Image 1 (cartoon, rainbow, N blue to C red):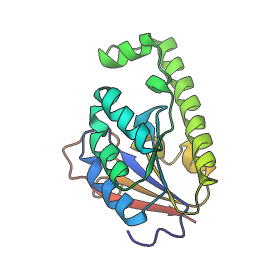
Image 2: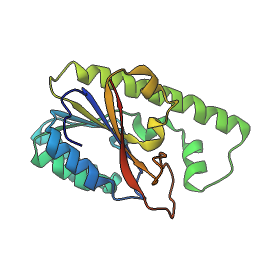
Image 3: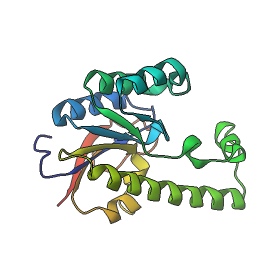
Image 4: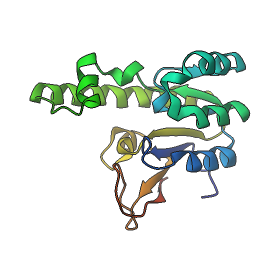
Length: 190
């Protein structure tokens, strides 16, 4: 996994909790030593100073308990942690309820989910482009593994990057829990 210098963008696929994603995130952050880590799960929050980390940990961390380890790591390593998504991922209360209660969405709900996903991915691209100009080091971006699938906007839009993603033994991207052994694979676009 060495040799990150050729790739200005390093994407890490996140499983949103069905794996211990933090181990791979920590490994990459400690090796790359980026100025910024862009994190989808942090929504629209920005932790770019000791005061911002302190305020977030005292007032907002209860809303993001799964992010405790990555927040502590970035704070300790003096790495800015930047949310690159919408608050509540752009979901209306109705759509949040469908997800939380595992309800069956209507056709209209599915259309709204699709529109929100496109808006979110365009925002991810915008934020990545913004932070690329703020550093000479590789930028580490942690996104849900689903956003790194072959036909995603992210992979179509950017030219030089490395993706580190959870996969099965055959190298297929894993985006949901499975009984199969999961390993991390890499995809490089130069």
